[in-house]
Image 1 (cartoon, rainbow, N blue to C red):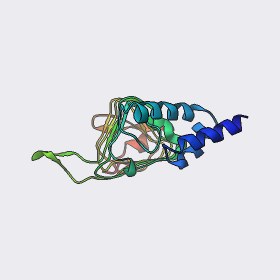
Image 2: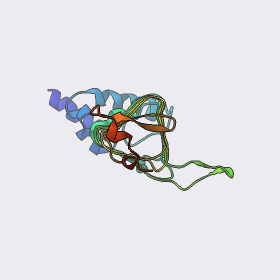
Image 3: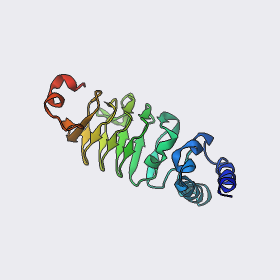
Image 4: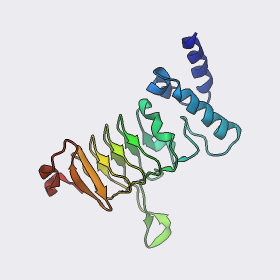
Amino acid sequence: MMKLLKSVLVAFFSLFFQRRIFAGRFFTKSSGGFVWAARAVWARNILRLGRTYPWPVALGCTISNPDNIDFHPDDLNNFQGTGIYFQNFGAKIYLGKGVYIAPNVGIITANHDIRDLDKHTPGADVRIGDGSWIGMDVVVMPGVVLGPRTVVAAGSVVTRSFEQGGVILAGSPARVLRATDGSSAASESPEHERS
């Protein structure tokens, strides 16, 4: 019975969303994805309270260009928080598998041109590696590449890349606090940090 109900719901929600997302864990291993889909259809498609997207996105989340974001269907939860801002009209955002993004995070791919604020600088892709965690109120700037298992502490501003991954970053601008395995000496050396 439950399998039949899920099949009917997938068929219905496929009218609004990309079919690939229904292979994700929030649809196959739980029912949370269907709740998100129902909320998104109600708020965005029926009440027209915001822009529609090709997958369920909460009203508190903004995506400049859904074609310029790459994520695994298991990670649909990253689009359900409040205040999350994916500014990706100028370049792509790549979210690795198992990435967690907290509320009020901004990931941007292009800045305003300081000589003419009505214009933007050329965009630069942002890449966040598998298994990374981006804490609340973090801003990730254009061109940043974070390696796998990178943790960014709440309130940080990431202005340069940390491609090696396996580190905890904090501050504005973000710096390496320590490695995620608890060591600190290797993670502090400048050759491990790339800009």
